[in-house]
Amino acid sequence: MNWSIVPIFAALISRKMQLTEQEVIRRDKLTKLRELGIDPYPAALYPVDTTSKSIKTDYEEGKKVIVAGRLMRKKIQGKASFAALQDSEGRVQLYFNRDEICPEDDHSKYNDIFKKLTDLGDIIGVEGELFTTQVGEKTVLVKDFTILCKSLRPLPLPKVDPDGKVHDEFNDPELRYRQRYVDLIVNPSVKQTFIKRTKITNSIRQFFNDREYLEVETPILQPIPGGASARPFLTHHNALNIPLYLRIANELYLKRLIVGGFDGVYEFSKDFRNEGMDRTHNPEFTVMELYVAYKDYNWMMDMTEQLLEKVAIDANDTSKVTVGKNEIEFKAPYPRVPILEAIKEHTGYDVAGMDEVELREVGKKLGLEVDETMGVGKLIDEIFGEKCEHLYIQPTFITDYPKEMSPLTKQHRDNPALTERFELMVNGKELANCYSELNDAIDQRERFEEQLKLSAKGDDEAMFIDQDFIRALEYGMPPTAGIGIGIDRLVMLMTNNSSIQEVLFFPQMRPEKKALELSDNEKIIFEILKKKREMPLAVLKAEADLSNKAWDKSIKALGKMGVLKVTKTETDLIAALKE
Image (cartoon, rainbow, N blue to C red; front, side, top):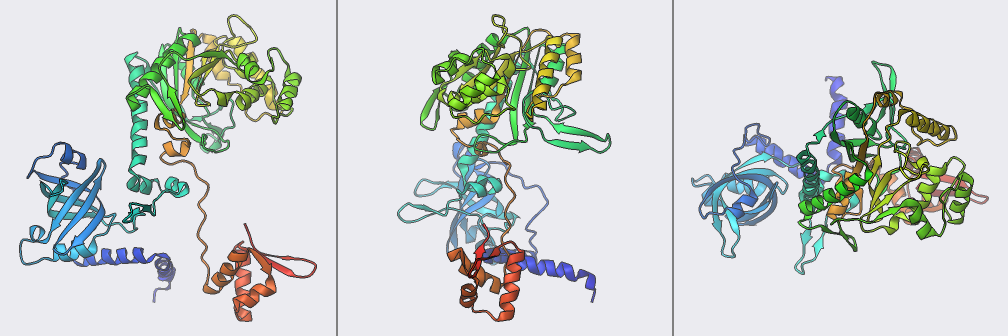
């Protein structure tokens, strides 16, 4: 015997033991198909000439069609059966008749292959003719069918009982986000969210392209993580032997292009921030940034109103969008509220001109968590974010931020303590951020140096100094307005989703917990403890009723796996499941 292949056989046997009953049955069917000379995964092109949608919209009685998709329902009725085929555009009913599929004496294609060897989830191709059933259902009369892909796992299909109640829906968020491919198959509404996402980005592109702004691409791997205040992801380039960062923003590169002579550039940018995850934050996210020369933030407010009104109409056929309990109107114009006035209105504190110490005291009085590392900018940001932001449901421009909050923004023309910046708030969250861009190279260097001081105090989100960007400004950048719009949040608004995970195909997830592989004796102990969580070790041993040898082996194994812990009290040993 070739002993080198024993581990391979062991792995195969182990995998076989882990299969569910349905998975074993499907693999057996796969083997039988191959024994019949049928390739369950054919390589040849399948000549699809129609879709489920066009069958219904361009219906012609008796029209010959070739359609392909996933088998989603199968109702066997002797020598005639009905089924449902799902493709990229919906579902269509199929009618399988033994005598149509098998006009000769050999009925095996219907009796054996279709009835016995196909399963829900299989991808098949169908040739047939259109007809309408007695109840008015547009249907394909199947003349021939081909198995294009044998499915080895059963789909988690919902079931409807006689009372119309739906059971076994695939609606657990953890599973849906991990297995988006399954989610898209069994929950048709999910697909519509992502179709609408593409409509939204296409609408933005059309708006900018009509104005002859140029779509560009800038580096994702950057030597300096500039353009925003955020904690970056760090990696290493082996060939150059240098650290590199995943970009937190593309702003500084786009402004280099304005220096280079482009009047308008934009990019749909994948950005990365090494921060927390929640319902509105994912470490990888999409931002659209636009920079236009010879404009300011007032012009950008007008442009943003026009853009978002167009996007809402393109996505939903109306400028009004329902988000949870709120109806949001994206029709221009939007209110414009200075940030210091917003804080004064909603907290009663006039923080204009306050220094760090005074702002920290205000923060404490408002019940906020503040510390010594927070400068003026962060403190004002914290006060506004916690006490004001959530109150702005309808689109509202919050304007004129203090200079300390905006190290890349031009000083306000009327007040040197402020900058020409706005953030657009919608449904209580920031959707867009805009500056009249700072183009004074000397002022920019001083602002970066102030950020370095914050970094020295312990602020791990303070900006780095980008010497090359300062050099670019020294060559001269025209007056410029720039804006960043969070695409994921925009899609959430336009599709009435409260979680960012719903609008990302594959959101970042915590590592998947592996199922415990326990022996029969280990399972006995585990099941007893699962009911009571903890109990005296002697009582657990008595209830498990195992031999001393089996008991010792199982307890040690559960301890090594991190499933069970034993602690000593004054009177006893206590066994408990680890959380």
